[in-house]
Structure formats: C-alpha cells, structure tokens
Image 1 (cartoon, rainbow, N blue to C red):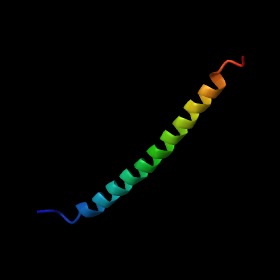
Image 2 (cartoon, rainbow, N blue to C red):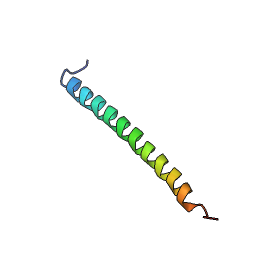
Image 3 (cartoon, rainbow, N blue to C red):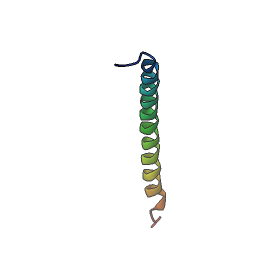
Length: 46
C-alpha cells in the first residue's frame, strides 16, 4: 500500500529532475559555444 506522505516527496523529486534537465541543457549549450570559440581562436592567423 502506498503512503500519502510520499506524494509530496515525488512532486519535489520530479521538480528537481526538471530543474536539473534545464540546467544540463543550458550547460551543454554553453560548453558547445566554448568549444566553437576555442576552435576559432586556436586557428593560425596565416
């Protein structure tokens, strides 16, 4: 039998997972931008 007290915990866990997914998407985008800029600045000026 499921306890009613676990429902708020599940909602909190779901909220935390969603927040972490948003943060991961943002950090992944920032990493990709930095990788591209590194490639641009690492080129020889020849």
